Image (cartoon, rainbow, N blue to C red; front, side, top):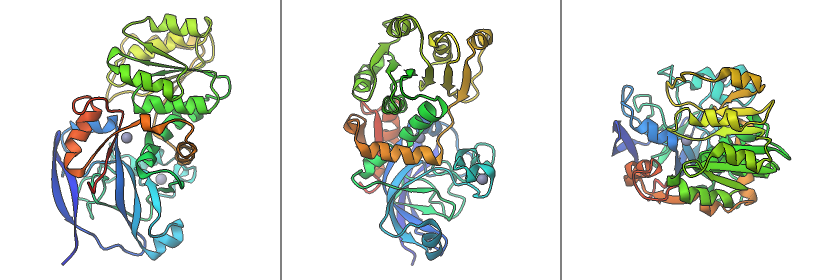
Length: 370
Ligand SMILES: [Zn+2]
Ligand SMILES: [Zn+2]
């Protein structure tokens, strides 16, 4: 009889149940990851509420674990062997398009789960696609040959390595896309795990001034921001954020604006345009779902010669930089890793990230074997 394994399965909007699966055979060109830590982020909060698209699924897209079974072709092709501690990217690229050769797997058409029901992405893929183990809220995750794995540097715990996803986004958006470097002034809006990772990235890149904004509800996170690279913090409900940014920068405005808010509507974009320096600033933004923007001040944007970029995940290189940044321990990571839950508490873990569960959550980990 086949060995059984356990996973937390999303069976409907905001509904999870534990289910048993058969542990799949591992062919020569595949591997099995024994999960240690699955990070939970704001995307989980928004995805969890949505109706199923077809069959149930195992969520969990920020995954760290030990390679438990490794096929010979997988080992030869990937250079990993049984017992290696790895961070798994959530993209499963086709492997031969222009984006994949550049390490920009997030742009590969094969990872567009939103438009293509056959596309596989860890944490987003239905259990109807064999062998079902496509998410990290599970004892095991299945890795085909096109899985993208990174070695976790020595000295980094699995839980700390679980920060690699927001940290790689932070490096991608702040340093690679935003162009933050020595002497930069940076406004980071939103002090969640993503904003805090952007603050660390900006500070580590040599930024002269890192400003992090939040609301009064974020008091704890704003305090943590100071530990993780922020030079100045602003409570946008207590202070005029634009005035403060201009005062901090001697009336000049910032070089780079990063939007890491969620559910804040158009305000962060409007503030970003006003807080940007007179000419040539860059603003990296994300949007939620099908958001539209009435009366977008495009004239103001073009008059200031601003560059607008989209925050869209991370490249292979950003993940490698994130792992080495975390391993450097430049910042006290224990301020970030606030909560950990077992497999039976996945629902509560996701709600905690959404501010509707355990208080004070910043980075939340699911430890599937607990
Ligand atoms: Zn995430
Ligand atoms: Zn591709």
